[in-house]
Length: 362
Image (tube, rainbow, N blue to C red; front, side):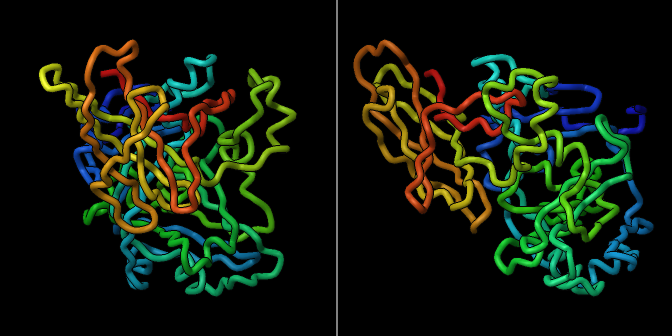
């Protein structure tokens, strides 16, 4: 693979792998912004980053024997939609799971999440524009693909979602060409990427150039043989081979929260904590914090939350008096259905979907 023509990468990110380039921001910087600035958006790549000319960029939609080629101009002629949604890598907090037992994958801390404003055309409008209906015969999936750049584990990058999700009136799936009010940067998949709110970032295909209406899920490596939660008994890639097909591809990530900042004042015993929480199937309703190993909890204040798909930013001021054996503050998110973030998270070989209580020493 040739990585010599990549655009400049943000110097504010901590590099976790160079080729392909994978990097994340310090979580303490991340939570200072409701909407994540472009220079603090993590980079997750399976191959080289390429720069494309927006004016000449096209993508194809295949529905049986019918194929349609569209330009970005065609896409922008359709109704324009803005949504705020958190983009999160399935491997967020992987290094914490790796402390339980070694895992396979890029070593991520807790900054592999970004809350951005995405602009584009709703996928359902695009499909309807080319004659695809929600009742297309024998069609149950929408497969996305990018042949535009080389890929580590397959000859293209691909994923898929159910067709009914694409046509859902509430799920807000977009073909996005802007991020935070600016043309989508090449490093973020520009000029065109998929945005699937509430679903892990592996399905948000960057540099989208192909859509296929299909009776089956995408056959791509990243849909079929990666980004699945395998049982803890599967400890290596060889043991995983016969099991990949037996487990579903990941969709929503678990309810989660992270403590990004913990500042203690020894003089007055105050402890200021701040962090983020991300939803799963239901929106974040609140976050609680504890300094006594979960014996008691105090509610944090939600300082930002925008719509169904965004993260929640939170903060709390606590009084901590006297000496404590363990100077650790924990966070625990809860959602609108009363579900609570769990204290522990089962280990899996790929180190994905880690969602144990957030914590930080102070």
